[in-house]
Image 1 (tube, one colour):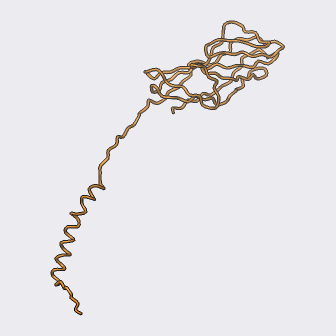
Image 2 (cartoon, rainbow, N blue to C red):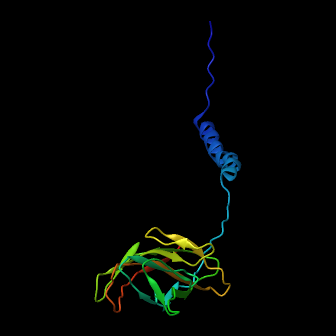
Image 3 (cartoon, rainbow, N blue to C red):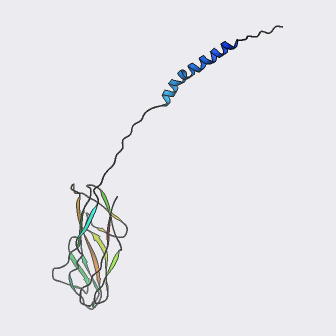
Length: 188
């Protein structure tokens, strides 16, 4: 039996190897080109006007006359004043607190209270103010949990009133009583 062997001289093998190395990048480049691509995206930013906020006037429950029965005085965000129990409203005084400011049109703002009730102190037993209400559409009770409103003026200006209910004790001592409450606003 005979076997046959094919032998390639060394220079021919080197030539085939060099040829294979030369055509390999050319053959691979269409696949490489398919794997590469370009994509574009846009970058955006919204620059907001800084939110300004200030008090226009204080919450004023007006002049009241106590009796031997406890009662309440409520100032609504619309300026209405009402009473319950043994309290008599004197004169036409009383007005809600009013706040105003400037922000960016159509931005939502969270509003919250520092505390759901405060104490007014004076010459007699302190009185509690509670159930703070913002004059929005519809009106909303304010609390330490944020309530949301939108700046609807194209100029970015806004204002809102805040009313509350004052608990007046029986035989409350006459005099001036005062306390403070904190309103916080935050852009969303």
